[in-house]
Amino acid sequence: MLGTPDRLLYFTGEIIDTPDTERGCRTKIAVRVDGNIGKLWQNWSHGLHRVTCYGNLVADLERFCRYQDIALVNEA
Image 1 (cartoon, one colour):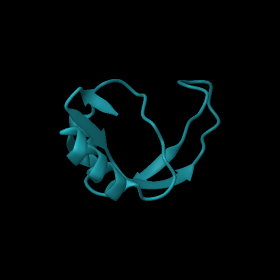
Image 2: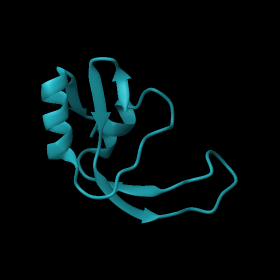
Image 3: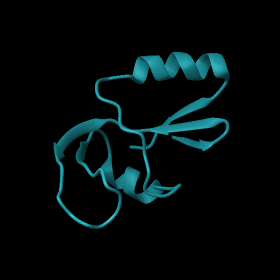
């Protein structure tokens, strides 16, 4: 997610559930976060919406951000 035009925010984890609830968006997932969940929760910004990608795309994001002069920030 682009937090600002020069920062791309991301975190990694494992999808552990797809809750069936009427709250929020149509597509919902519960994620076991890699890293510090407290840091992720404390610094969460820019609303609830995130793009979910399956697989480990961190190396691709690093390359893209390096070429586009965008800071890649791990939220967790």
